[in-house]
Length: 237
Image (cartoon, one colour):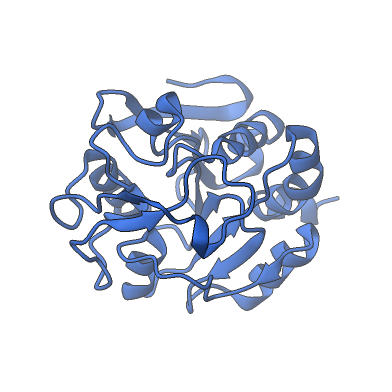
C-alpha cells in the first residue's frame, strides 16, 4: 500500500501478540541503502516518535532508506520492554553471544540507568531467534541487504557502532547530535541485534537518544538522521 510522501507500507509479519509489523519503503527505489529500526524495546517510545517524524519530513523520492518504526508493538501497547511473551527482543537474536539465562533489565522510567537499578529480569526467549518479531526482522534485513542499519534506543545518549560501520558516518552522526561514540556500552547485551550484525560483518549503529520532550529530541537528532537518509538531496542543495 502506497502512502503519502512517496512511501510504501508493507506488513512483514505479526508480533507474538498478533499485532502487525510494518516497514515503510521509498516507493520508487529499486534497492535499499539502509534500514532504520525503532521501538525494539516497548519502554522506549521516543524512538518511535523520531521514526515517525522522519517519515513525515522525508519524501520517499529523496531517500533509499527503509524505516521500521515499531519493532515491538506488544511492548509499546503495554509500556514495557518485552513482547507479549515477556521476551526482550534485543536479547533474542541468534548471535554467538546469546545466552539462555534471563537478563537483568532496568525498570521502565528509571531516570538514570545505573547498575544498582537493575532489579527485574527479561527472558531471552526459549531459543535464539524464537520470537516472531525477531524472525521477521532477520528476514527483512536479509531481503533488503542494507549497507547500514540504524537501531534507535534510549536513554543512554551515545552511538555504538559495529566494527563494519563506516567511521566517517559514525562521526558525522555523533557530531550532528553531540553524542559520544562508545562501542562498548558498559554492560553485556547477549543476543542483541548489534551482536548478530557483528557476527555477520554487517555495518550497524546503535543510536541511543535521551529521555526528553519530543521537540527537544527532534531538534537534536532529526538533522543528522535526515541528512544520513537523504544524501543525494543534501548534496544537490
